[in-house]
Length: 227
Ligand SMILES: [Zn+2]
Image (tube, rainbow, N blue to C red):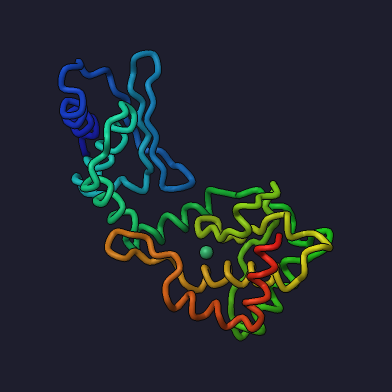
């Protein structure tokens, strides 16, 4: 059994050397995502670490303790700790486990794919035939509940879901603009996020090259700008 409290206590002493450490309650918790939280309540420091970290090596737990405690007390977090934690979280087997756990635990609320003006499932199948030989397994598809303008589309690997902004479900939006946004999110399915060193590389060169295979991409990008 690892001694979480000893780790957090040692880090606390480093971050707040002149403050007597408060009582701590630290546990692993089955969050939907690889998430960890810290808060103070009634003088007790309550920490919940993602249970995906149960098997993490001690230096990773220490890095996370540094991040959480420094954030709580408004101290800068050295890049060393951030990088160490990210490296662990980005490992292939950890990311795969996080994704699986997310699918099982999380059910994101999506509005059904058949919108008032556009049907995401039909468009998905059409794009699937045209660009992916019909081989792409269909994820959950849905309209994002709020008409987000900043986020046109989003692929959520933890829920294996593609969300498209409600803004697109309108007679004023040409189908081609919507196709292009959905195509982009489908490419995220095809090219899972890779870690480059410890940095996330979301739109790799292969990703971008394939995005340009959408025949009307220039027209589509102009339409998106106009929206
Ligand atoms: Zn993207």
